[in-house]
Length: 180
Image (tube, rainbow, N blue to C red; front, side, top):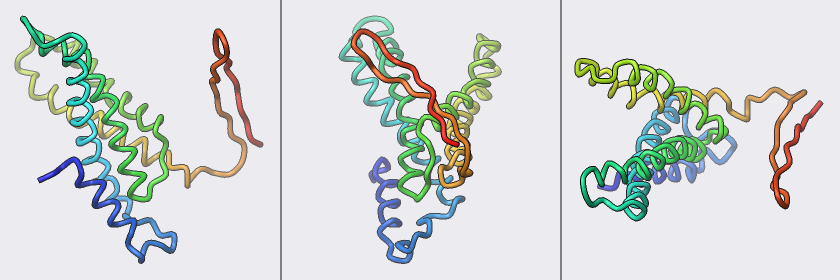
């Protein structure tokens, strides 16, 4: 059983289906949301494992709380990168046209309530189940919601504004882009 390859293989099989070659989306929006959710969990898990491995290389896992230090240095950041990446890549493979950065912003937005409650309920053993449930569902729900809400194919034509950053020798340049 290879769960990490399940979503991309299913998605690639759907994209290769000749019935969908005529420009139809290969997966319905509802199906895509389910696959994006699975992709988010898989991405978070893979990101955490890779990040933990990098964290062990940086801080080691010896001594008291060595594994916890490695998880803080590598595992949590790896999961934070893997979660929106899994949602975004799965959505793209299933015919979506969302935005990676907005997907990541959705994950952050979905993490706000768990962060607030984790801080407010620190030390309350009765709230552990609730906090775990919130951490397991809300960040992924936020990422999927933002990916699906901000599809590029639904962008209305007309005026738009964007921001850009470009590296320069000794600094960077900020810019504002627009379209009428």
